[in-house]
Length: 487
Image (tube, rainbow, N blue to C red; front, side):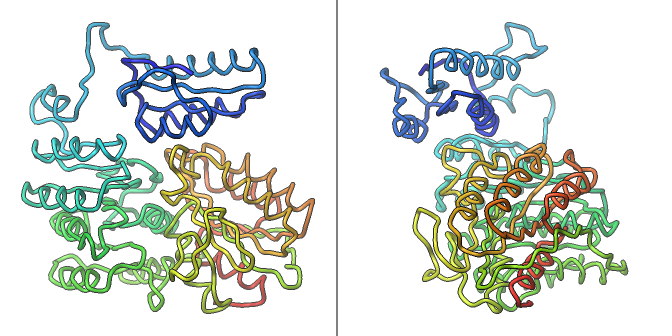
């Protein structure tokens, strides 16, 4: 275990380093992270707490291994990864800015119009407030921001005439520039306002498959349309897109919103010059694919046959249940909304109704859909779109349980995501099928232009026996069909 001063890296990069080093032979645990109180608690839980006092400005490197040789190799691998990250063409005398405000002050002229904040939640509010005070819009990638601080930031942003995207905004595309977990989609006339990261990815990728591009994808954070926040960023984003000459149609994407907030958004949308269509999930609302198809109709574009690949054609065992293992919360919600009326109660760690919740062990008999990307499961570890470990463990546990099931998954491609998700998922599916009959259905969200390539991933997953669909709604309906139902 070691603490280092004068070294900083963003949390996503450090999680990737931890994952890569943890995969080495003989390494039993790795935590490379800034020494925040949360990360120090995680290190203590691993039995690797530092003996000396630590501060959040220090880098914590905690490793355990089977022997000295494995430990030395892991330490060297961490050093190499950090050294690669720190290489720069700047002069040795250059001192990087330590705050958003200082960084903006050091830029020539007016500088950028958008600041990106990705630091632990307790420190994110001050950085975002600095950017707002400097007249910049903010993409607030950080989670763990208290809801009252979110409201205060968004009120300040409205007064300053700028936009706060977030907190916990993982996906945005601004003037063709993909930020966070976004996909390589073509430019075009559709502006997207999204209180959902994977929901935005699903609809933008379907639009791309139909030959229609996007002008901007403005994420607003998953809580923006809740009663506690009230939708201020959604309203501001709608107004911004309405003023954008490149935007000819707007799509609003979200998990089920608070009814009163949804009504306010609908009223605001009705007063805009640009037509707005809703893709807000709910028991009586269209699924995301249907919302895209309706938007294509508005634009006079024919609905294509959405890309898919047939699988092995396995039949489910008698008494089989649905087991959904999702990395995207909105896609998990969509699956449950489609499955519930057909199958009855579907349990979840993020249930549609409180009484359908499960314990912290994430296990329950019967129909079950898990959101493995929920904030409670990503504390101290990479999101499952980056690190598949949690899902691979869940697949192995399902195969070992003996409970007959149909497996439903999402695989989300794009910038920032696992560079080759099929490489880990294909062996896991093969191992599971060697133990039991387990038909697998995959919602593969992405485009051909993504670094991973939609067809390359789809072909690999289909060769492993999975049925693959570009549409999560179609994937869910296919899984329900294997169970003898239809939605």
